[in-house]
Length: 108
Image 1 (spheres, rainbow, N blue to C red):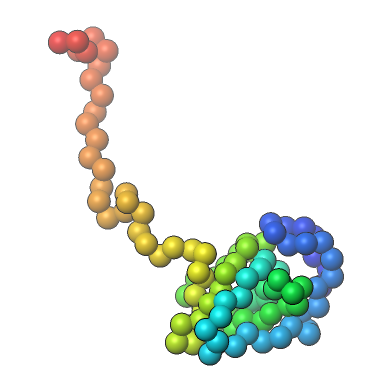
Image 2 (image 1 turned 90 degrees about the vertical axis):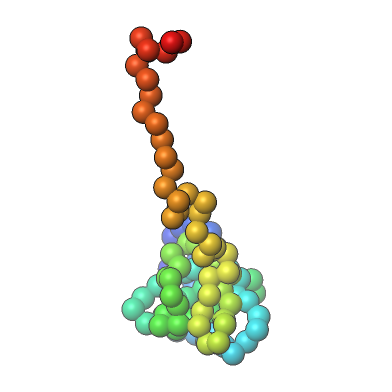
């Protein structure tokens, strides 16, 4: 596949048909830019410049093309390790704001 530089993807030809399959039983991590996403697979360029194929059905959330991804496996499920699933401090707890007083009321 001929790719344009997008995100962290290097320029060049990356053959998806020769990608090695990611092992969902491994305890390790796969690091590198996401090259391509289709209906069935996610292709990632590893540190060794070899393309790795991940089964898209194993992901809860799909990485984006060009994203620098750290992908690990937990009980056969793919996990994006560089994304946090923790809620942000503002989620779930609405911020209460008071309306600003008009300028003529200030100082009273």
